[in-house]
Image (cartoon, rainbow, N blue to C red; front, top):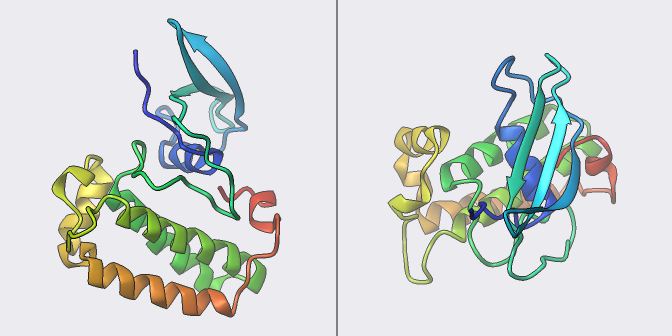
Length: 187
């Protein structure tokens, strides 16, 4: 029974944030993680209790072929595209993070802009080296397809490069202080 791979802790936590409790809609869960053997296959198990309604929650993620060492916050993955978060969801995350940075204090803004920038980098990973547009296969979630359908032009190499540059300029004025975003529960 193969599980979708969570390349890093940051990616797993983002996925969990994108999948609220089915009973009450809360994302507030204190997650415990452990390596488990499921039917002879190793998996990373995230389990916790929903703070909103008390429902037990559990997700199993496959392990990456190669461990991805964190290189800063956030580290969502290596060079391969995500199996958990589709291209449209990544852009949705980038947009929400960039919007929250606009009204946050400089410390929080730096963390939010780091997330937004890393999310844009994740979208590009779905594209072949010569592709000018993110392929259709990179959109499998309802949110992802909705974001793509609202403005398909945002998923071109040129527009993504422009967005990366804009986020980089904004982030230059709001540096991420080590540990601060993670301590506040982002990622």
